[in-house]
Length: 105
Image (tube, rainbow, N blue to C red):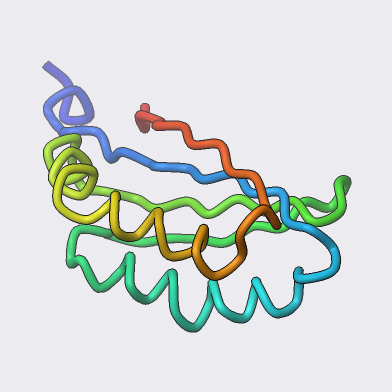
C-alpha cells in the first residue's frame, strides 16, 4: 500500500454564501472578527480560507478544513447548531448559505 493510501484524508466543510450588497461590508467584517474566530475556537478546525468570487458579486466561500470526518461530525453535533444561528440572528434575511462536505484526494 502506498503511503498516500494509508493517510486519512482531510475533510473540507465549505459554506457558500451570497450576501445582500447593502450589508456586505458590515457582514464581512463581522464574519472575519466574530463568526470565523468562534468557529476556529472550537479547536476542531485545522485551517480555513475565505474566498470571494472574482466573477459573481457578493459571493463568498468559507472553507473549514478538518483533520478527519470524526472531527467534522463532532463539530456538527456539538457546535454547528449554535454557530449557524448567529449569522441568522445578526443578518436576518440578508444572505443565503449552501453547505457541502468535501474529501481531499
